[in-house]
Amino acid sequence: MSAHEKWVAFCTILIKEVRRYLRIWPQTLLPPAITMSLYFVIFGALIGSRIGEMGGFSYMQFVVPGLIMMAVVTNSYSNVVSSFFGAKFSHSVEELLVSPVPNYILLAGFVVGGASRGLIVAVIVTCLSLFFAELNVQNLGLTVAIVLLTSVLFCLFGFINAVYANNFDDISIVPTFVLTPLIYLGGVFYSMDLLPDFWAGVSMFNPLVYVVNGFRYGVLGVSDVDVRVAFGMLSLFTVAAFSFSMHLLNTGKRLRQ
Image (cartoon, rainbow, N blue to C red; front, top):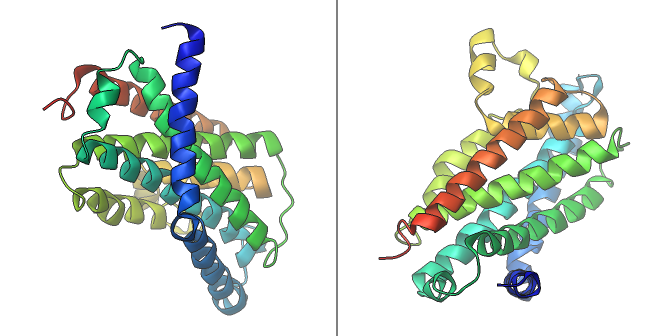
């Protein structure tokens, strides 16, 4: 395929993905806004005022970056896992696999489409958070880079889940029993300094720790882990997830049956 044909194929998949979640925006964009607003009210007006400061900031300011990334993670992940498994379930993915479009273009189309939803949700939730807390971004470049890396990483995780899923129940198991615990144990609601040394060490294997702390550093200028380590680990996780996703596509494992 020529470069132009590859670009057309990529844009076609991307536009299809964007139109899919925009068409049902009350189910894809509205729920995160409502859910995060409830978090802001509970932790800002109720619990936050009783906890006081954490990390040198009001509790509301401290948790807002984590809540924003929580919305990005869940929406990026859910968009790709539902979209690709839907294509797999209806067997329309087989038409993509036998087409002359390179596998990396197929993967990029689904991933960028899912990441775009994550970024839109990030903007929506950030705008809502400004009604509850004052945010002065300390490092805009790092903040944007962390959001982009996180969106891509969890889109890839969603793709891997979709490949291995056998039915619609399987695509809800990982978010329920893996993703949710990782989010709540990733430092969204607390500082890692509060953990005993053993559990703080165990938390270093949680990719959400690097997501939350990297973004928190970009927004507030504070982090429980070295921001260079956070960015490096996110990059490493992303490269590994992309390589494995490409392996699944190239081998056709659980796709060509």
